Length: 262
Length: 282
Image (cartoon, rainbow over all chains, first blue to last red; front, side, top):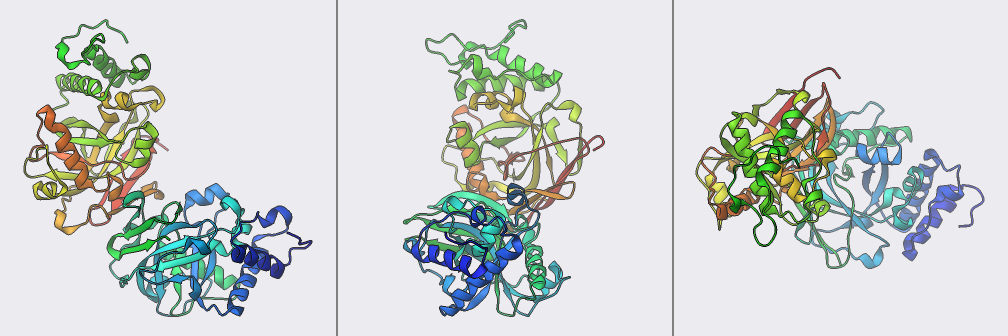
């Protein structure tokens, strides 16, 4: 790195270079101790503008650090978010090409598909559920641009919450009558159960996690739009994947999503 | 181990061969006293690293006799332990273990637990399967379990170890009744065609705060498969699972320690809630 000041655009370009070169770097905060959360989101937004300039279109958002255990591990009390683009979306049945990535890991999640715009500083889980057109099982593919996923909170925020790819299950359900806290989550890799959890692992309730996102976006003058996809946070530990793996995420009443890794 | 108390057990329970016979009765009595006096023992395998699972089950059977002589009642079911991959890897094994559930150890939803009777207890949420027909190995499958089961029940298990600091190896926990202490069962029996036991999520709270989540598949991939494993494992011993038996199919998350005044609640998809209260002030 060769940045004397923490310039968001320069840092975003540095991270984009790592992504395009499929090379892992080191945390930005080591060289830029002034990189706080506020500036980190500015780096993230500058990075998303680079993606938009390359023709990628907004798809929605993803949440990270939604489990209390992970927050405690990082010494923080809040989750974080990143932005998704259409170029990150794998179609149903489309394999994950690890040749395009650095060190991919997968997390099973509950995806929200927004049916109405949603913004404001007092949005809660109830408003999120009211604005949700459907929920679906999803696999979030992370790919930190920092070697070994060694990062501070501002580092990972600047790196767009490690966003890389996602796949949504081919089944979508109306959320009415489903208690998302109790949706069982089973992550299988190669036909063997690797981890289990339930929806409550995302901030106690996945809709509460999305509500946090709406409030966080509000502080930056933004909000969710009808049609947005929101990944509400990994329910299990992230699991590293390699070519030949078949990843299956079963999400209770929501259905199943699969991903072949090449 | 102390050998002060007389043993009365046939020698064919032991490990046999050229080894000196295992002092099954002495070991069972040591664990019995540890339970009664709430003073844990050193791991049995520290003194007897050669102790096998079969040896340990012999000790377990003798310990059950001692507890039954104390009025702890009939065997009303079984609990499975070490059903998660994580626990199996931790102990370097590839199979679960089991222990009988005695009538005195079964409690209703909301039971108040007295820490004064326990040593180093933890709690875990599980799916219990209740049988309405007998089930026998050696070729029992999840499908047969489904046909023999009246349904599934939300359950929590209090585990405890009579081995100091939970320093257990496989034989230690088997001999110690698979580290079981007590269970609490919901009274809501849900027929198995109304749920997918693998995908039933559970959220465990302590004093209203989420402490763990999991899903049924954490129990050997499928709670019904866990019951089939038990039926097949009991078969060579001539033991059959009976109608009315309850099978605790294994923890769905890492066990959580208990403290005085804690209120635990496990809520399951399809099965509903079950919980317990720890006596005393927080």
